[in-house]
Image (cartoon, rainbow, N blue to C red; front, side, top):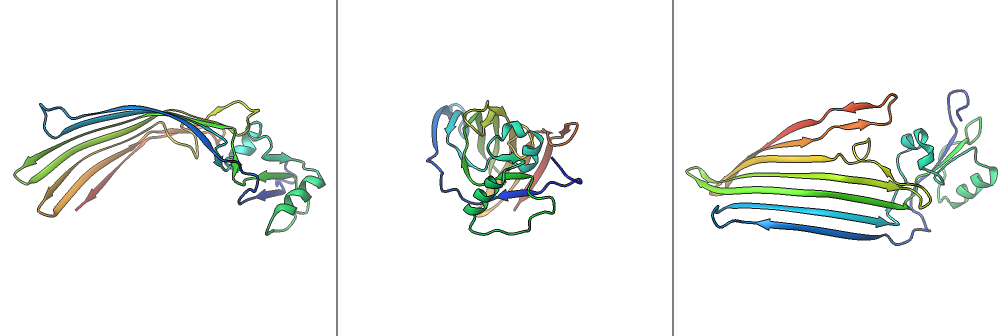
Length: 219
């Protein structure tokens, strides 16, 4: 509810005396495989499923909260009463800034809090192959992490929202691959790093952000 193009905001930061312990139920299953017929080859994969309850984190990003206020009920308060403003100011150890001419029109509680829930599911995969050459011991390696779900509810009364591949949240795929060489204390490596694209959900209209590929080299 901007007045004259601006919104007077009371932003609350820091710790929270009402925090409760964070809990999580975790399931993992995986394997490591090193075949006898291919000395130096190792393959591993792990599936993970983590269900957090009372997840300790900040409730989210202010820009996203203004764009999707229905996902931040209890943390973003529009047109607060004088009593609500006084209550928040009374909890602060330090107050900086000044009250805008049009008054405080919104309160954003960005303190650490217990979120309703956070579900994370994915698969980690890696493969490597070490072998000897005339130049020394060489190794080919690759790894990838594929997220299948990253959904969150800021309040137990609210539905979960899928945040995967959006601004300020994880992308669904990261991978790296490379080669290394070591010989008598000397070594080097060349590695390629891939990060999948995502959706800029804060712009209007939403826009796609391309994936990117970078390279690292060391001696």
